[in-house]
Length: 233
Ligand code: CA
Picture (cartoon, rainbow, N blue to C red):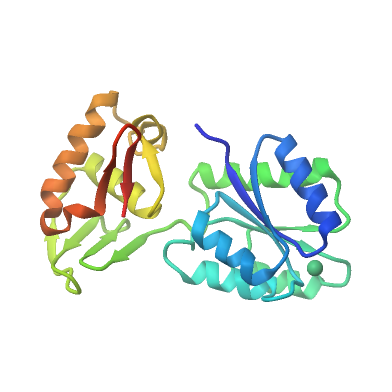
């Protein structure tokens, strides 16, 4: 599996450097932004595994960014750790109320930082994240992971329910939860969608073929990336 990707948004260059250095050293891939609006853009584009978010930022503050992340279906599942300075305790409470997963008070030790990031990522991996994505909606396709229902239709109207097997459903939902991201067959197998089934590499192609057939007019949502794997458009 590739390294977990973190986005860090912090406007103090020295602190950003310390964060970035320690997280990279701990084995994470790190992207950074010094400005709130640029940071949000980066988060939307890269859909990271976790976001470290300073509260007071130029451009757009941490609480507003948190709200936007939780409000959009393709980013709502991304875990967020807030970075706070002394005296911002009331903002921390507010932050946790609108969906931050944890907070780290400055100054922090590198050890504590890495431990907190690890803990939140572990919680998400084990499926105990409160922001687990349950619903994906696109033009002509709606997937509800709670009711296990998929509706397909022409542009603008996803109105006919299509039945998928449990494996097909999990694979489709996994891809649809990460739009734009390319996954190799191996990554898809490791993604947990095949948890309780022994799926061999080749089988991914079989499942994808079945999913495409059932998606009918919307089969184009699943794209083959030659030599790499698959992507949800
Ligand atoms: Ca700041």
